[in-house]
Length: 275
Ligand code: SAM
Image (cartoon, rainbow, N blue to C red; front, side, top):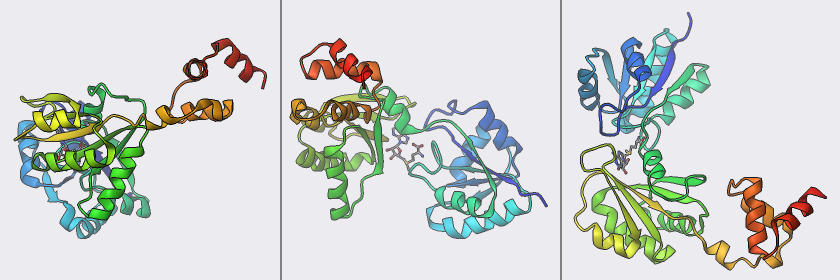
């Protein structure tokens, strides 16, 4: 018998209209929907008048349920995996069943759609070219410190998910390690009270007293390296690769190098042309 397929389907992060035609068609056509919280998913299905057999698949039963889903996929069933909001596997269950499908040679198809951090990033005003998504910060002291250090040194925009009642503590922890850097809070994306709050950590702590709803913290990349770096002490190749690692295109790199070294673009351009 031919194996079925697992469809990993993104659902809205608030506004029920944020779902693709393809996602709706997939949810209509599959045999089973594996949902993080079946009651939550029912609201979405009712909105789109979809009636389907639902199986619960959440953090606490991920292992056992993965096996149940695998046997159904092996019987040829088509299954859609959804989480409560956004993209499954992004701070939501999904990884386990995907690993098992890969082990068993079962096809997995992503059905793209909403993901909270992507939408926070694109409207944050921070650099979007290169970023680091860390999910929720660990609560364990040692692991948390490690992540905070990683944020401190990150030359990419950093994004973390956080619960509103923990925002103040997290901002204080952040300030202690990274300093009073610029951050953006993206709140209640796609919902009535959607907003972006921008400022230094101190300003944000003041502005977000009693904040409610779903939030994402975005942190401006570290400029430390750039400020401290004495470019005259490194070779042109190292200088080039410093910017290349940030995903900057060649023309822009040449412009930046010339500025850093107080020389002409042409001189830098000729150097690399003659190599
Ligand atoms: N799978 C989801 C995704 O694709 O983004 C993330 C699920 S995770 C359990 C929930 C966290 O995502 C929330 O605590 C919040 O940090 C963030 N989040 C989800 N929806 C959001 C929204 N509408 N506005 C802001 N943040 C949101």
